[in-house]
Length: 281
Image (cartoon, rainbow, N blue to C red; front, side):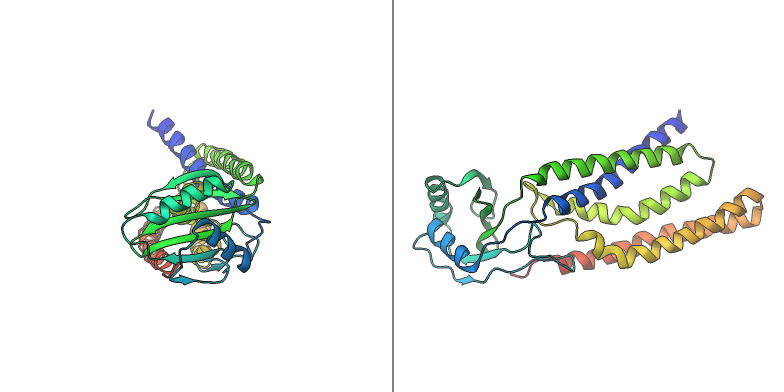
């Protein structure tokens, strides 16, 4: 019974890990080809949605930078314009945007929970606008909307990755020891940090920030770790087959030390990456 539960757990683990990788690839592919707004277009939309409101700070359309990775101009999540307003505590801009968006043909008007007041998000003509309240102030964002293929690509990538992960881990779980332990350790240590960061980046509308840059940002850290674990696995297989007690103990110690140090290194790296990824206000 315990062996069957371990196999089920490995199948689920593989589905979650590779399913997250597939989700990231699907969001990247499905989000390609968007058209960012021009500076004049962004200024015009802001004036139409919030007439009479003068932003205390506004910038030109900027291209995204996430997790240490520069986004292309046609990547979903890039090419955004930001406008900052001093709205005080009366939430007047929120009601103004809600009313004007409804009369100007914006679709999918949805509430965005905020710090003091709730904001709004809506789409029209391939663009999305979002008014959000935070502790730093009131921000209006104008950015490209997700293309029509985005949802289908994301779902397809997630399902394909989950199926591949379940099949791989299910096949590994039926092998003789120590194959399941070594392969599971290698894949889990290599994918778990990226999977965890990917899920923290998910938000309303599937993605509030692009999630795929997590993987290229982690690559310099994960590739050497994968190579070390791969060498440990290559060393462990023949020693396990010969049944040498001393070699088996040495292998167990090496694997244990690697598995113990990996979370410490990963946690430190993830904290630093998370701090670097925060947008500057």
